[in-house]
Image (cartoon, rainbow, N blue to C red; front, side, top):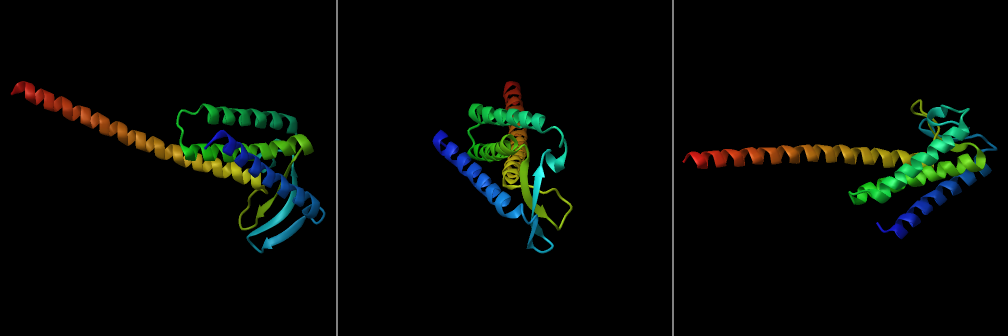
Length: 175
């Protein structure tokens, strides 16, 4: 993906995230909770000053700095990656967009606006940016695991071929 398309993609996702959060603040905050699919998911306004599951809620400034550093590392990895896999690029762009969306909240509001609450399990309230980060990280992990397995099989195949070549050479020398 070209740099221009990558920037447009990231900015579009960040824009979607911020527009959703604007409407959440404008319309959901006054009412607090709206059932969406009974027993499955509802929208609940939460001002999350912490990290995952509200942890470290008293350290908003530190979380902002950590988020910016992680965003920088992800951007660096994207720019410097030797593997030009389109899937890896896509996953990193998702994570970058989600990170930017939440960093904007932390800097502008001093908290992250969360609003999606699954009610069929005991789980944290989250937002669109969190979904981008999670999906990007999950797909990247699957890709890396598959890549490691493929490399292991290729390495094993190469070792077996070298062993067979050595046996053939040894047989030819004894003939």
